[in-house]
Image (cartoon, rainbow, N blue to C red):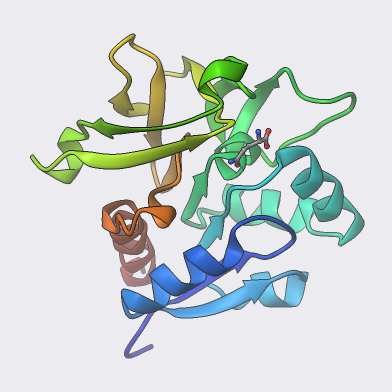
Length: 201
Ligand code: GLN
């Protein structure tokens, strides 16, 4: 395969357009993924922010839960923001009754972890793995990572120590939304994972 990587944005619910536009700006070919046939042709997947309980329900009714779980288990690079991070977590705390995730990352996340006063906020975050320039991070009814397994790297924490960006192999997750601030470095990192996967024998 020559040229641009082909990546999917899970398009069941959430801020799909922002991710698609950002990824296209980085030179990727973007497929909006709603069905297993679309998942099958992408080399990486972004799970957008939105509402994890809705993404969960729709993924099950569209027959996407098992294919996405299988793809993650087979090594598909995935980047989840906010609700997308929740979908990647092996354990979801404060989910709605019966809420499930795709899992794959050995983490526990707590939904809506910031109180009503701070439902939405913006802050500058140090993310050493992305260089010296801080990341402008927008949090919207954001989750927090409350447990990380041995193979999970913490990429960013808030001043109080709350974990808000994590990576496990080719799975990347952030509590916040870089795509709304024109911050491209997390998506670039995801595309590096995609390229690495494509070069694998
Ligand atoms: N609170 C939402 C959820 O539980 C996540 C919010 C977001 O993605 N901005 O899914």
